[in-house]
Image 1 (cartoon, rainbow, N blue to C red):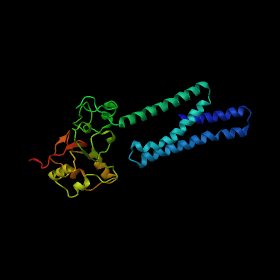
Image 2: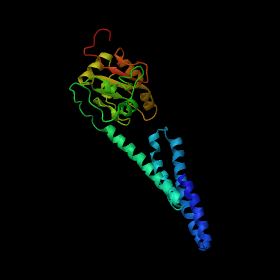
Image 3: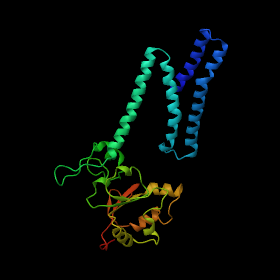
Image 4: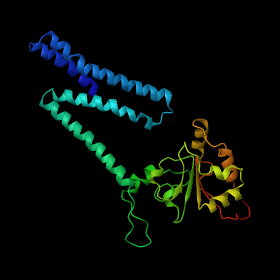
Length: 273
């Protein structure tokens, strides 16, 4: 929209200058300026979308660079409105304040949600979140089929005190998890890799995790498959290998879901594991 306003405004300005007696030279000087910038930014924007569609796996974060041409087009549009009379100028100012307000509120909410919790005044009660749970846990904390915790909140923030989670594969939204955890990005070695190098059985893996202070294992099987098929991942940590090494472990939720939360059994494991 901003680009269209700037394009149209450039043409109108050229005509107005010509009508005012500035001559053909003024028309030629005024016309290509904003229109060339709009064309260049629009081409840049289209190229970014084409690259995103054809060269990436369509993650929204890869679209962040489009902010650059969009900001330029928006500024050109606002500038065109400012030159079209009082009402148009007021509209431009209100729009600019509105966009800045939305961005400011969003940024504040993000910082607010990431700040530490404050202790509850009553001893023994859970900490008080600095933002409503439906803004933080329910929308950003990963869940698992068959287990939604308390009030629709995912399981990781509902684990008992003293829990420690090892995350494998699925690292989505971990910023909002308050339970201590061990994890690695898709480009780093998985923390489970050294424990799986010799294809351990369920009892051996449980003992190793307990020795490392881990009480729960959070495995994103669908993400694990995707990483193996795209970026690459440790050959010792596959869906089949992890399923085999966790056979018989207690599961919080559905053991066949895309993401599974295992409770690491006690070591030594009781009969039946």
